[in-house]
Length: 153
Image (cartoon, rainbow, N blue to C red; front, side, top):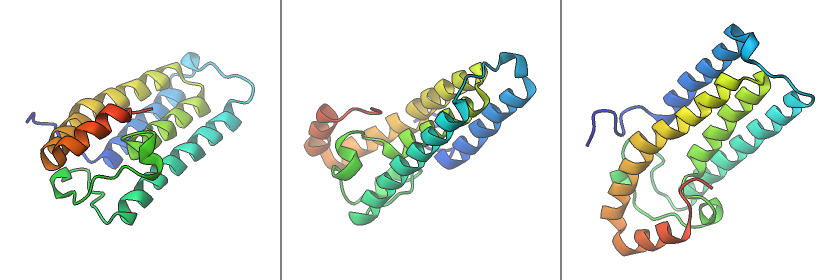
């Protein structure tokens, strides 16, 4: 296991990247490309992100398994219902959408790049390690789930 794997809580990561996206929009205004309706689109994307993330939390609560992303080994159930029928990581997808909404609010090109960086970091240091743990916990049922449902969307 690498040093950064399962170390930085995703909400902390979201906070740091959110500050970076907003900072880029504020401090690099020449890299912003505003367009008509960007504010409304940003708010809609943020709302969708919050909704998707909360739907993931609801499913975890419904199946009475842990939502602690730093301790995937404590999972007691493989969650495949609700929003998990379409994405294996709705909470992370929701976070990425919120971050995308911030980048759209500023119409920030560097902000969009930071959204990609967030997704890449999260995939490498959070999602892939979680998948290894879940494969070990749930075996073939998890392998079948991975074959049916995409990681992100």
